[in-house]
Every structure is written in structure tokens, then in C-alpha cells.
Length: 250
Image (cartoon, rainbow, N blue to C red):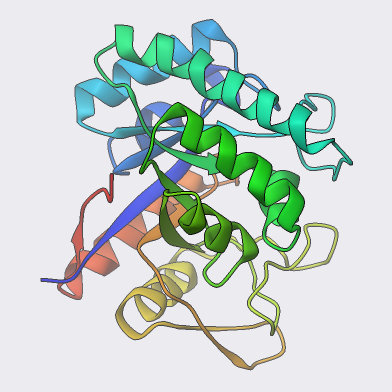
């Protein structure tokens, strides 16, 4: 049976006002904010405890240090400093996660860092070096065919191709910038159908109508997207209805 991972960004908002508790009962991998763009020790502890209880893999959601901009502003950070920042974030989360019985199993860059290293080799190498310093062979999420996943492979990491359930795609396979209208999707049934298309057939419709090829091992639902819980549940149901198992890659 074909299988795919479902991941979500977790721990970015206060536990009581977020969809995290419900998402952790649906997803198989949790990208936990570890202090750069969001998250604090208390939130990390709560999330990791719940992830361990539900058998969800914990990943370090690393980012630029930009809480004001939620990590969604591109930053010109020196490679040595970026490597240091990323490694510090991973270790911070791992110390908390280990205490809860769910050590960091993978890494996923967040927001502007994710998009920048998809094409910027210098910053991609810096993040890859940080991940490799934490653990050789660490799985890392990223856009298929990106500079980031290529650099990750060269540094002995395990590249994991990712698709996005609730984000629109440009014709070149990149994500439509959030500044553009229609960049974030909200129609649950429509999203579920496109997730099945991405996983089962390896294609997704871009905003201009062109079909884009995607290589998917993991599908992301953003935890801060309105209706995230419903989106994740409907996507999971449709995948399973189509004979696709839901299982973590980590």
C-alpha cells in the first residue's frame, strides 16, 4: 500500500487558542516552532508531551530569528551565524522533547528561510551543516528539486520531498507568495482532492492552470490556516479512501 506522511506546523500559537490538540490526533509529524519565529519552552513541552502520547514524530521547525515578522521576512544572515542559530534552535527543542520521550526526529525550515534556501545555495549549505552537526542522516523536509534538498543530500542528510495542502503553486513549482491573492486555500473538499492528486498521481494544478509535477513523501497543513483541523481531517479521510496509508517518514 502507498503511504504518505501528514505534517503540520505546531506550537506557533498559545495552546488554548490553537488547533494543535486536534491536529496532533490527525497528523503523523509535528513541525514544532522552537523559538526563532514563535514558540517558547512551555509550549514546546506541551506539544512534545502530546506528540509522544499520540505517537507523532517531532521535528524542529527552524527559522530566522524574527518573532515580529513570524519568520516570514527574508533576511540577509551570514552563513556562519545562520548555522549557529539553526543548530541552537534544534538543540533547544531536542532537550525538551527528549524529556517528554519524543526526541527530534527531523528538521523543517519555516517561512522565509524555507523559501530562501530553496534557491540560495549559501544559506542552504549553512542550514544543512547545522542539521548534520546535530545528527548525521537527519531527515529534512523541503520543496522537491530545490537547492536545499540537493545541499542536504550532499551533507549526508535524508532529503524528504514535501507538498502543501493549503498553499497555491506557481507554474515553476514554487509556492505562490503569501502577498498574492489566492495564495492560501480554504476549501476543504477541494484541498482534499488536490492532495490525493499530488500523492497518487504526482501532479498539482498551478494557479495558471498548468499541471506541475511534485514528488511527495509528506504533505503539510499549516496549523495557523483558518479551518486547519477540518482541512487536515478531510485530506486524511480522502487519502485513506483512495487506499493511501498515513505514516510518518521519520
